[in-house]
Amino acid sequence: MIGIDTNILLRYLTKDDEVQVRKVRELFGTGEKLFVSDVVLAEAVWVLGRKYRFSKREIVETLEAIVENEIFALDDPSIVQAALTDYRDGKGDFADYLIGRRNATAGCEHTVTFDADLSDHPAFVIF
Image 1: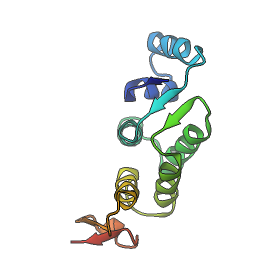
Image 2: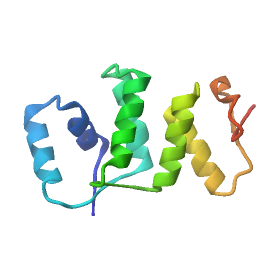
Image 3: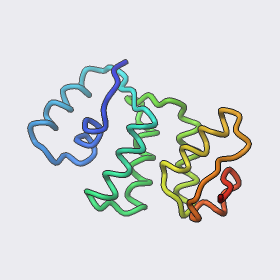
Image 4: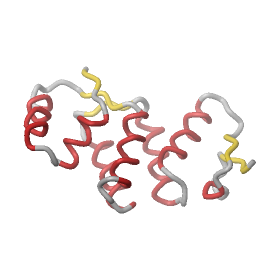
C-alpha cells in the first residue's frame, strides 16, 4: 500500500495539470492500493470547494466515488461513509462531521463546537 498526499488525489480528480496527471495515472496503474487518510479527504474537500468551486452535490458525488473505488484504502470506511451522509444531509462542513464521527469512535460523549451549522447533529454541542 502507498500513501498519497492531497495533491495526488486532486490531480486524479481534477485532471488540471497534464504532466502531473500523467504521473498520477502511472501510479494508479501499478495495481497498488492507495491509502487516503482522513486529513487528505478533508483537505481535498476544502480545496475542491474553495479553489475549484465544486458544488456540494459535486463534492458528495466525488467522495462517494472515492469510497466506492477499490483502489483506495481509507482510515475507516464506515466512519468516512457516516461523515459523508452527515455532510450530504446537514449544513456543516465535511471535516466537521468527520471530526464528530472520529471523536465518537474514540469514546467522546459529544464534540463541543462554536459552529451553529452543527446544532442539529446529536454528536455536537454548541458552546
